[in-house]
Length: 64
Image (cartoon, rainbow, N blue to C red; front, side):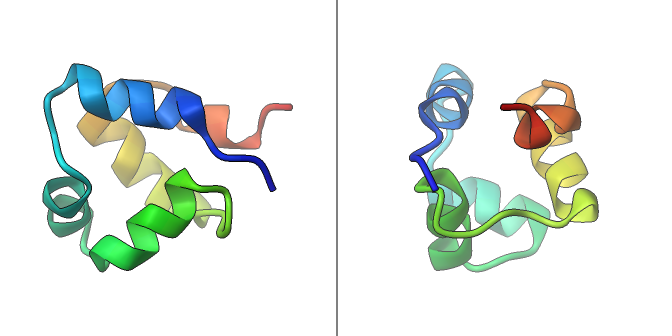
């Protein structure tokens, strides 16, 4: 998997840390880090939570 630079940009534009987002969506900071770094794929439910916090379409996780 590739690092999700687009996800990092969305987070940085909001001025949020990985730990802040992780707390808001109910996962560990390590799990969120894995998602950003492409080591893990979020479930649709988790993708929707992340997208809601960062204001983008959750389907972006499943686009090529």
